[in-house]
Length: 104
Image (cartoon, rainbow, N blue to C red; front, side):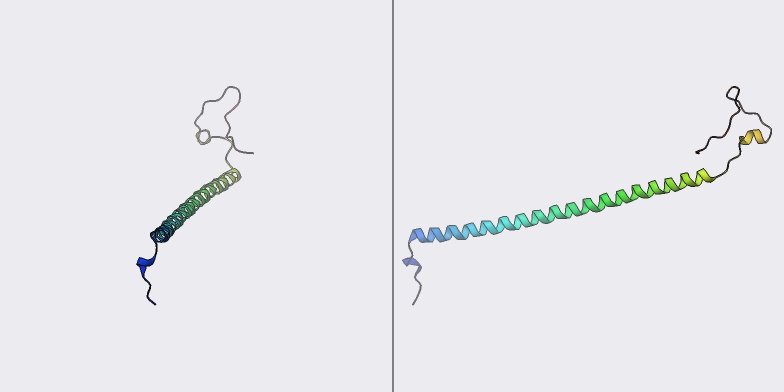
């Protein structure tokens, strides 16, 4: 038995053609949505990596600065300025001699 397309009514052919066209459009929209999701995911991943690197860099700088300050706090400095140690006078702040200030 041969299938004769001319025996199919026009309304049936229009209906089937509309379903095929809808399927093509649906596949195109699904592919576009998938591509958009992939781009958004890649952008989010790159943003997360960049933010993590910058945050790690800031924490590293803060940790290094903290170590430097703690090391500087342990260094013993003389109570007088170097100019006063070799016989040169330095200006005073009134009745109190100038002293080296440091963290306690």
